[in-house]
Length: 98
Image (cartoon, rainbow, N blue to C red; front, top):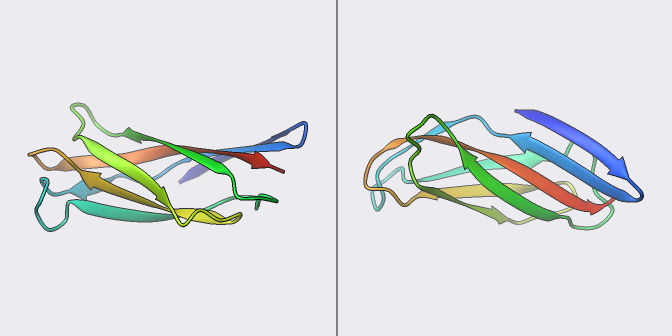
């Protein structure tokens, strides 16, 4: 994983990308995957988290959810909604008070 960390006028912005994982077709075992993301620098309050899937084209249709978001990190859970299997990862953006 790679990370970026910025602080602008009391706001901290952190970004990163996960490694890719193999997803099974939808509604089959292995269609869910989870990554635990640790923020490079903790936030002073729980940040807003935004997700975007990435992977080799053509991408499988994965949907990401930021769960259990804290000042120190979050669970990135994702499910394949596609009828085929394939690899995908995610890029994420967290914005909150420094």
